[in-house]
Length: 143
Image (cartoon, rainbow, N blue to C red; front, side):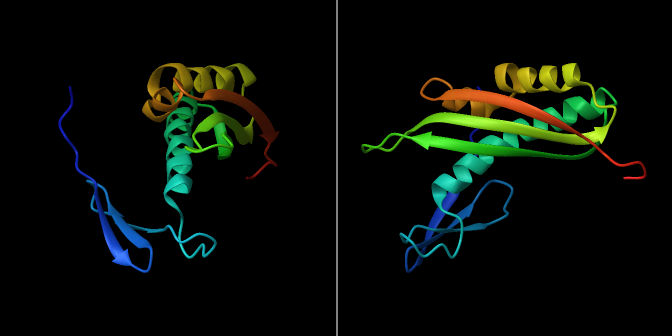
């Protein structure tokens, strides 16, 4: 088992919290319904799942020497209607832009991330369906 890592969540007043993870980089969270002055806890959770798989996929593609010039993941979520409004589905679309990017390489990178490496996906998979897709866009020469 790995060592304990402590994240501190501190109430900052007026329904704001400051989350300080072990890295020390604090993030403000807004839990006041409708205000949207900062990201909410569940928005950060979804961003974490997306960023976890994105980090794996781009690392694998670069290691395979794919000529990626831009990359992003769009994460669409679905939640239960009743409380607790748990996530039941994550749809993650990987959009890769580059020169002669191999579809097989992109698909394999996504599979390795979602099936083996991404801890966040592994955490949500027992209770939520995880669906992935990808799109490859050809970059203009010189970009």
